[in-house]
Image (tube, rainbow, N blue to C red):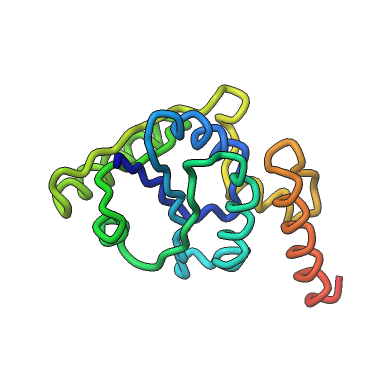
Length: 166
């Protein structure tokens, strides 16, 4: 079975991520969305929330599974018996970083390949970082993420504002 793994923090999953998943899924028997714990990044949403949201918004794609993980992507690939990674490229800056990761992954786990895909033009400017910042400032992210994700962010940042007494 040919499996591709799309690793990331997905904090939150965006329309750009979903675009890549929808386009890559028909090319493989199994697509695993590997949601990284990434505690060093101090995600706005918990790992469980990110896995649940991704599972919910991707539930209509039959060969897609969402799994949370903590650790090295190469270790996750070994556990899942996969050797192909899906990575999105929005800009040349992404390419430089992703190329370095692809090369390191091939050194760490020979036989690993990376499939790079560009998002649809309307999604090329969307990043989880920008979405979080707009949501943190109580802006409208409804055109950037699915409704369930927008709602989760709204609740998360309303709670944060309440904690600060705003």
